[in-house]
Structure formats: structure tokens, C-alpha cells
Length: 153
Image 1 (cartoon, rainbow, N blue to C red):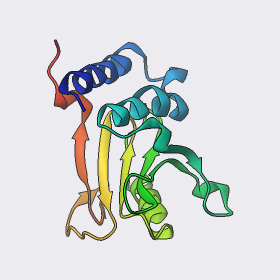
Image 2: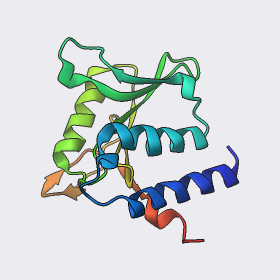
Image 3: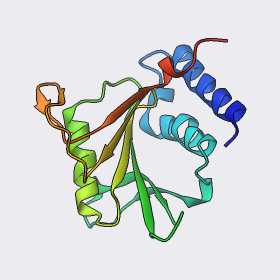
Image 4: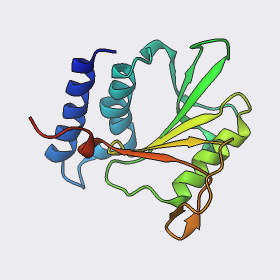
């Protein structure tokens, strides 16, 4: 990963959300996934060809994962990325959904939940007590907001 590439990608993400208003179709989940999240993952060093979109390991379609990053090392599966619309606030329901995906997939330990602006890093094996989001305790996560990563050029 080159710092310059990551910086450009973060600026692109920031500009994307500045340009489109809250009602824009560009903030739909699929657009945020492809235009922001995938590009950021690539800038972080994850190969695009290792990203499987809309993975359905269970019979129920509701259990589809937006992105699975697989085959990076010894383990077959590495990371789940759950993407939400760019104009919604992430809440405990989204966190619980993502954690349920982790529980159903034994080879996954880590997941990212994002709306393109805010990134929550979740781990199913690490317990953090008393973290409260929307009055519900969540197992664990680390938050990064794209807007706060870099100051405007």
C-alpha cells in the first residue's frame, strides 16, 4: 500500500459524500460498496480479485454478506465486509446482523461494518464490556470515520 494511494482514496470518499445529497441514488448500498468501500480496501492492500461480492453460504438470502475477502493466507476465509446505504446511521441492528454473519461462518473472526463514511471493526472473539450504541451493549468494535482521517487539501 502506498500512502499516496490511500490518501487519494480517502479524499475521493470524502468528496463523494460531499457531492451527493442524502437522497441520491449514488448513496445506495451497491454504489457505496463499489465506489467507496472496494476502492478503500484495494488502497489498503486487499486484492480486488480476492473480494467475493454478495456471498451466500446459507440457504436464506437475507444472510448474504456484501463482501468476503478470501484466500489471503493459510485460512480459506479472512474478512467479512457488510455495507449499508451511505445516508443511514449505523446502529445496533446493523451490528447484530454483522455479528450474526460472523457466528455463522466459523472461519471468519473479523468483520467490517460500514456506510462508507464510518467503519466499525468487529471481532467475534474479543469481548469489550459496556460499549453502548443506541442503548444496547455490543460485543466489540473499533470506529474510524473517513472525514476525520484526513484534513481537506
